[in-house]
Image (cartoon, rainbow, N blue to C red; front, top):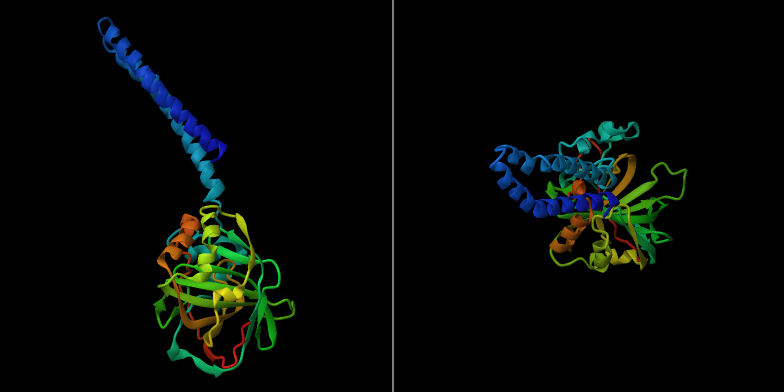
Length: 318
C-alpha cells in the first residue's frame, strides 16, 4: 500500500470517528437550539460535515488517481476492444509502431490446411537446462533464460532460446478454431547479419489435464499476482519440460504480436494440441493487470502469404 492510499484511509477513519462521536453533541445542540432559534440547529448539524466530506472526497480522488497512474494507467498499450490504446490503435500510438497498422506481414493469422504447401524436411531443436527468472510485464507472464538454454536451427541458421510466455486465449487459429491458450517460445539469432533474426514456436493448448510445466511455476506465478515489473528467480529450468516437440507444424513469415509489431519473424506453430487445466489459465489471467486478462491480438490479414506445413521426419530434441 502506498503512503498516499494510507493517508486516504486514515482521513476516512477520522471522518467516521467524528461523525460517530459528534452525532450526540450535534443532536443535543439541536434540541437546545430548536426551542430558541428554530432552523439554526439544522445548520449546526450539517454545515461542519459537508465541507469535511468535500475535502475528503478530493483527497481520495487525487490519491487513488495517483495510484492508478503508478500501477495501471502507465500502460503503453492494452488489449481492450475500443480502447484508445487497444489493438486497433497500436499503430497510431508511436511512430515506431506504425507496422501494427500498415504492415503487410502481421501476426497472428488463421492457419488453414486448405491453403498450405506441404514440405518434408528435418529440423533440429536442442534445449538444455539453464538459470531463469519469472517476470510479470503486466501484459503477460514470461520465463526468461539468463544463460544458454539451447537453440533451434532453421535452414542452417541458429536461433537461441530467449524466453517463453503465454497468451489466453490463443492468438493463432487453426482452420478457424481458437484454442484456450498459446505458448510462445521466442528465439533470436546471434548473427547480426541474418535478415530474419527472430523465430517463434507456437504451442496450442485446450482445457484438460494440468500442464506439468505450469504446475512447477504455480507458486512463483502466484507471488507475482498484480505485481507489474517484478521478477522471481527460478533457478535452473529445463526448456524440455515444456514438451513442445512436434513433427508436424505450420510455418510462415509474420511479425511480433505485440508493439512494435516488427515483421520478419519466422513462425512455427505446432499442429499438436496439448492440455492445460482451467485453474492454470485462471492463474495466468489473475497475475496480469486488468487490461491484459485476454491478451490475444486479433487475427491479421494473410495478404497472400505462403503457409507451409512441415513434416520433420528427423526431428531431434535432447
